[in-house]
Image 1 (cartoon, rainbow, N blue to C red):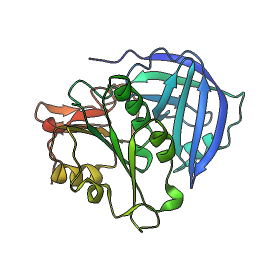
Image 2 (cartoon, one colour):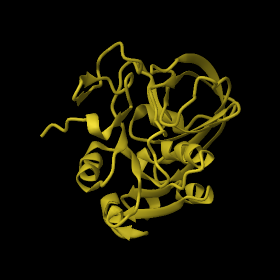
Image 3 (cartoon, rainbow, N blue to C red):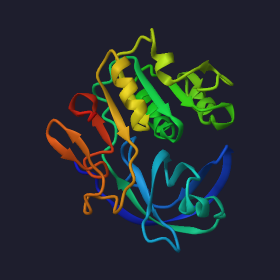
Image 4 (spheres, helix red, strand yellow):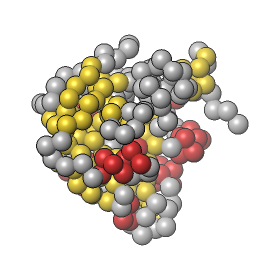
Length: 249
């Protein structure tokens, strides 16, 4: 299914720092094109040629929540934007998570800035009567975010940190050992996906993080090798099924 993309002017109503180099931005406007957890928006910023793709953390009513990390000039500019400013956004981009195969006890696995889309996914799964658990991985304690909010939904949440400064010491796969789950949903960097693929005991879905040009499949700049050929992360993804991905060595 191909997502329906809409262009909208969204007003910033909140933009605050929530962890080291990590910000939460809440915008208001017509977000009706956002229908599925795992979709993203593409933001136009003055002074930058390419739009910035940001995963949707939450969408309810006329408000959308984005959580982003300052990693370059574009996101640095975003961090300084104030309530009342308006952003030109393409919304409803990408095909998100399919909750149909989740089973009763799905496991949500997020690494760093891959954590945000799991919040809306958790809400959707809970609304369907499922009992999700979550494993959220970070480098250290001051990089952690959103774990309390996901836990507050009623999701059993485990935090891992590489340096052991909070939660389980190590990576998300260390917390996966012995976990009981019917299916998994993951979002994060590709090295994390490769490790999960070796550790997972069920089917699952990965939401890829990728640098994008246009964000809707025209430039062919982002792709993933699958058993059906190359698929564009921004158009056929960002979510891909575990069973279809070919991991290149």
